[in-house]
Image 1: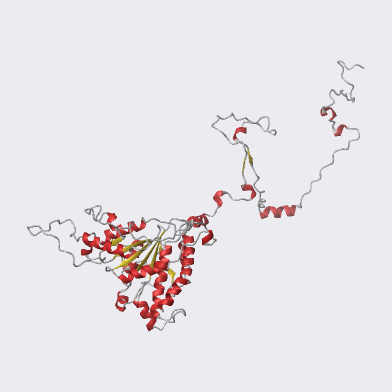
Image 2 (image 1 turned 60 degrees about the vertical axis):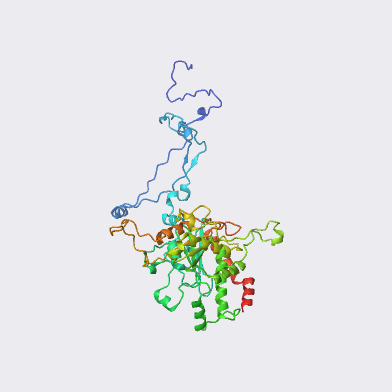
Length: 480
């Protein structure tokens, strides 16, 4: 029978010839049309009893199961946004291409939050602030060296890992106003109650007994990262009296109390000459020759600057490292009005220059009061050698002030101006001194740049070396 134009007989299936060998569409056959194909199975539905379904409905809907972990999302580069994926539907809308705004990254960007890593905003803000916050502001001084001349470690809590630090120390005899001056330079004002000063000054009762307030070395650091070191009075008679009257046991290397007091003073002075940028020598009268002999002795027993290498000094090379010496400032506290006379100033500078002629300390040319504009009428060559000398009038109300000048009619000549004293007020001169001290050059104390914390460890090592110094031990043996 011909195939043209005629339909097959009922019940007979027409088979079409295969046109392409490689096309798999011709091999598709319905399993139900095969002659030996099995009939589809009847589905079996499992259900709970009606009573159990009613109890479950009364209990309420079950909580939703926990969702799966967030997937890892692979984001395409911006340049591939217009391309259609292989699995995209035919009806999906294709976004128009954007204008090219510039070079775009070709690498894909991955979101790693699905792997359990916290996002940047999930960090604890309290912990982050604690890492970046500055140390707690100091309200009073603490001990760096106690009265038994032992090192204290409590100051390390207030120090940072930064190198811009200035260290200022003070030396002076008993009752010259060292603690008061250091408090005013650090954080306090003259009109405040002295009991609120960061370095506690002598109380009236202590002055009557002839005692000293500071024992050892006190430490204070300001928010401007300036370290102030207040020390006990050098060659103090009150400390000597305390040793004798209280029968305090001396260290075995010292046989006499006055030798022990002098050695304590030399240890403190040699320590300040090694770890400070500026050392203030406070006096309340001009001048004590024994004090300058003491400075020369302290400079002689000053420990040398540690070498940057562990090699012996002979193997380091022909250029040996230079020794470090701080700036020394002579502060004349409670100066009388006649001390501010230009001729008297010239005499004081000449005496100090001759006394310190053989010293390596930087005692001139950096922190003089003549550089502050307080004496504008003096000629340029008024002082052949300018020493670091600064005068301060008494802080208390001056009862010996000259009465204000009066006009011929009896009234004040300049009613709006304060009476002329021959010098500036205590607050004015103190502000000039503070500005000069804080502007001092912050030279390297050792051959390596020190942070605040490194300075603390360096100072602890220097103090231990001073206490074990062979030069000081030999000097003590000569005194005893």
